[in-house]
Image 1 (tube, rainbow, N blue to C red):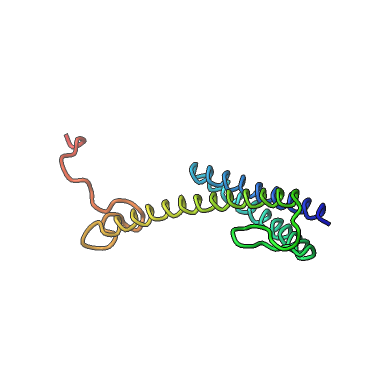
Image 2: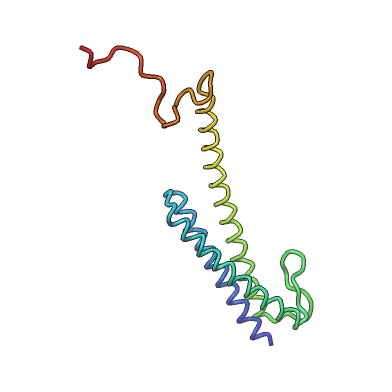
Length: 153
């Protein structure tokens, strides 16, 4: 039975690693501002997450059958834990930690972009006495440039 659990843990670790690679691709797409790639990566992440959910459910069922559970600090506790099972579990925990860190980094990058954009919008809105004084509805500057026209001769 532990061979089946080892195989399931390997599948789960592979799924988490694939998710982590997708997060790295997502971070690169954010940096490049490649919104088409981001859309495709979102779909890819959804598919990977569904596969990961299935792998996790299978692993949990096998662990219950073997009398194992995840204890404090992510350690396997319960019955006698086979060394190969413990090693396979460490890989799952390692890839999960890396994916969590990558996801948090991507979230921080997106939040930084969002804050910058919100601040820029606020600056444009506060440009003068009235709202949208700087730009008209068509997006063009409302105030003509002042000074001497070079074309006027």
